Image (cartoon, rainbow, N blue to C red; front, side, top):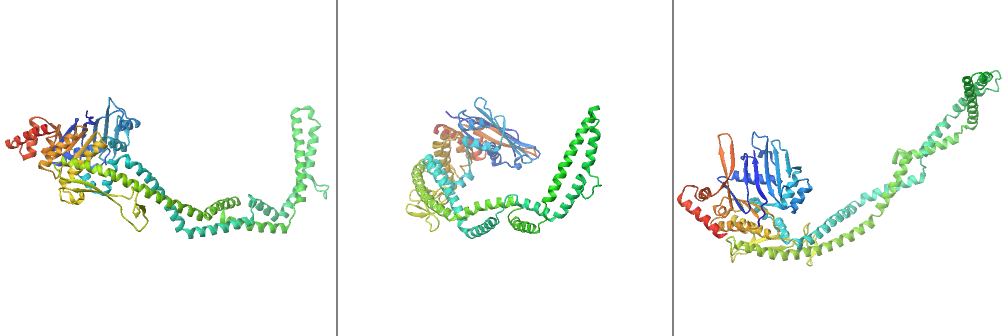
Length: 581
């Protein structure tokens, strides 16, 4: 039973299309039209719906936005359905609604299952739902890198497993090589850094600074430098508080406070408020006595020692040299010394580290050689099966004598290669293999790269054959082919149409084509029609059935819709297609 993924696509204000509905059914749908612009716009719309690049130029002039909406049927257990639900989308009886809005200013928005989502999610869903192929994909198939990717995709787990291990080892080798190069090429700079660190650490160690010592010395220098002034001030203050023995007539603060205390103490019993004041005056007297005693002791202990002051200033100069070089404070200097010691240990260990990295580098290269050989073996085995399957498909596409093979080889190098099969060969992130698809179109012709040995029509059929083989090994529910039959005609076109119809038995197939031989095999035939009112060109999509379909095939065959000969040929083509599916 065919799972029809894309049921309907609605397009509004997109290029030449304005409010068109494209209804797609299970099986094989052909899209035709008089010119390519309208058909291409249908493909462009589907590309936008599947997360393709947005271009504000696609919005019709005068319109605010272009909108593409799609209705898809998906299995609730499929990877696409699970990913959509993870993003918050909701399925309605197995139906998933997708929309893409492109504003005239270039802003793009996407919605899946009623939930706004990043546009990138559409591309993730597309990977599991639709395979889009056009003439640009044919050109891509000419590149050896794409051919290697195609072979790896066909091989599946047989290549994916070794390739994953190889890729991990390859990334580690690059990291080790980068670190090793950094250590060896910057050896001189690192040696200079180590010398500077060692000198600084030794200078700090020789000074033996203590945390906070700079602040303590600054305070001591300030006190010693003003010792006489401090002593004089303390003596004056002491005399003011406790009196001067040399001046018996002098009045001091302690005597005055004592007199005040005696005066109120004598009458305190008559008023509680005054008693409280008497207590406070007594406390003041005690405090004055304590301060006076401290001032006397301060003055006695203060020593204006010029020798000590000189020693303090010398020590401060030593510490100042350290703070000028290594930090604003002694605490900063000690932190720098600690960090510098750790860095110096790291630099001094470079030789050991270089030895470790060199050993790991050699081991990784040997491991990569073994993994690359395993990749080559897996690819060689898969290449035989892949080429045989594609060759069989080409026989069904009017190329019965063509033969496809793969050339898998490595390039020997005298430089930094790895050893594979006893030879030093170049290697990269995907292994050491160079994969090239070869085609011998007929007996006696030597196999040549398809970029050189295949005509446009042959290349179209090779690509279709490759995709059909993929459909059997790694299927997706829907395939879109945009004029992959270019350069094909006559009997070959009939065989292409027949093979697409067979592919549609197991998947939904949508083909944009200009060949009546291909369109005749379709289960559903859509025509893109243009109208022009003199100022605006619009396109619509119409389903061709019965007589309308015969007229469209007649137009495609002879350019004349009412030609009896063309009509007869069209009817004959339809009948042959029904019988030959």
